[in-house]
Image 1 (cartoon, rainbow, N blue to C red):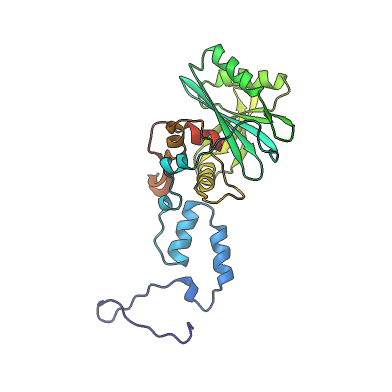
Image 2: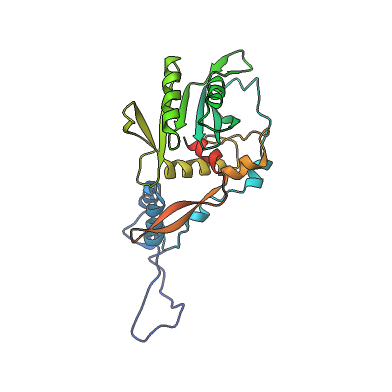
Length: 278
């Protein structure tokens, strides 16, 4: 079809000058398989922009790739509570630490991925709040087939109040609980999870590639049909939780003279998103 095509001008240009707007799909030296491979290999927004611009000859806007509405997320919320589905396999907990509160998300992993949310409010420098968190981490989740699952792994944000986080993680490990201090780092060139240095010389810190993590979570939240990767949202939380899930969007920023995609917070509270990323 391409070999039988003809060139047709679509605009009036300068005399003697010709310009072309072509997709790589029209090239005799390109195949659909090679284009598909390039698309799958473009993991970061910068790589996808290069693919859209140079291969498809199209404009790319990362901000429109994943568009989340807090109201739409809340509308699809459902009742999630004990006893949980029989195919529940694994429970993890992500904890975001702020100056005046802790926020915790329990994520239950099974065929259709569900999670339940527990919020703890209070000054994180006070031992009482951390005692409540310890009790929460000792929670168990009963399933319809009679099993009782514990929290198998904890990721505790250490970006604020690191001394308390270290104290808490060490105490959890003494109880034979898998707990890790984590810290998010921006940049799509980072691995989703990597070992960092020692946190105040007391334990190994895990570095979370926050940008790649947020994009993966947003894509999962954007799925409309239940299937692999779909996240079921609980109906027992308030509207602020759903606003937090949809609290960030990708925008272009100039960093050290170069244009880069970076997340921009659109509302104040983004802890629900951070908890899922960790």
